[in-house]
Image (cartoon, rainbow, N blue to C red; front, side):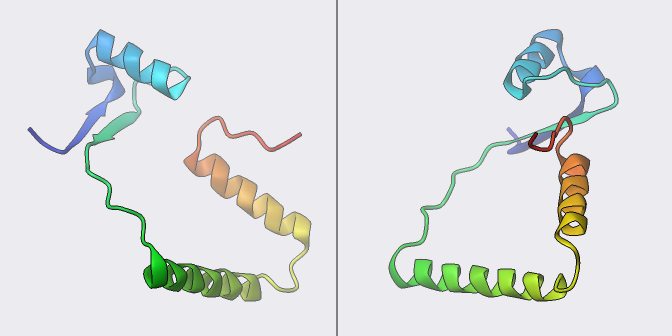
Length: 95
């Protein structure tokens, strides 16, 4: 059995589609694709490996922050909201 399944929503069995829509909390559009992955997660890093991962992440965030210096906060927030809307259908900004 494969570890990754990709199907068009309109090709799913009715009971499968209903179950997926219940999990997603929204209806699927017929032209949407649904992917399902099954995998065994690895344990989270501990000790020095965890400290090093955190350090690298902080460096990455600093590089990103340097690139946005001088931009108005509203423009940065608008760009983030646009990015979230493009990858998360139904995303709504906080009110």
